[in-house]
Length: 340
Image 1 (cartoon, rainbow, N blue to C red):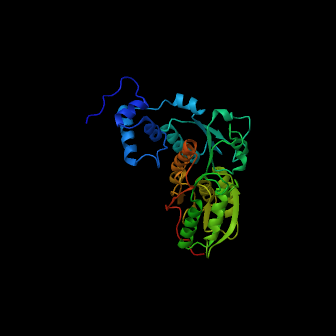
Image 2: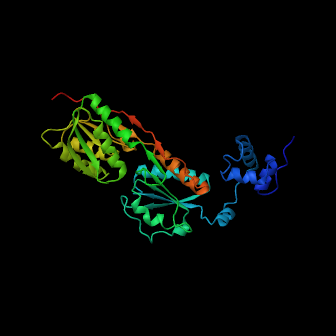
Image 3: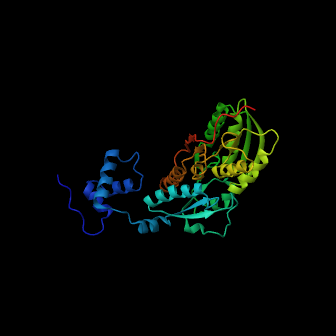
């Protein structure tokens, strides 16, 4: 049996239904993502094929007016200058565009409270917040129309607060780094921690210390996630009489600063000092030798988080919490320590 001729002008959902030989209500369920348990997978595929064949695109303006939506969501990040959060935005924006949503970005200062007059809650449908505690978002959580709560999904944030979360497995990352440096024979460890006291950095440090085994943290300093901050903190750590043989950093940019400190003191990486980072951002491959670090899939974090938020808007269910695995990338900045 041949398919109906293509419609003249812009195709409608009725045209998709006619082409797929199903009811218009079935088309609506499929295109709205509400078909599970109500429409068979084979029929879903038929409807999607028909929509693609006709070049059908939903009338998002009419749908938004009907649902009282703006089809705009807010991405909250600590800073805009970090390559990590740029990658998170890239993944989130791609998924939003695929589902005809726009994204506005709100940078906070390292997880500070949002200013209540900095945005209009009526202008957004939901919030995707990265690398911060839930409490600073109280102004958003109570700002939604009707129910009084804007839909909210948290990224790289502590689970268990009644909010959907999508996280990297940062604890596994630091356990893996600990096992790597201990396996090389390092026993005198220095920790260069972030000054930001958010869940992700606390989880990293707790996991690292728990996995040290025979090694010991003999020196510790906190620094901003900057090149200069990493250099100044590393200079203090390396000036101690009992110098560490490895410096474990919370961030790749801190680690690049540690390289500068080592060079200032006449130390070679990795012959005199091993260095590790975290994230596997561009700095990890710019320094020489290239940096051993734990790779976090930042683009995927943004994409999965935005998927959860848009599913929450469409169905009322963001799905289960997600933990994304990373990967230890061993490069030239770590080696066996030279015997004292």
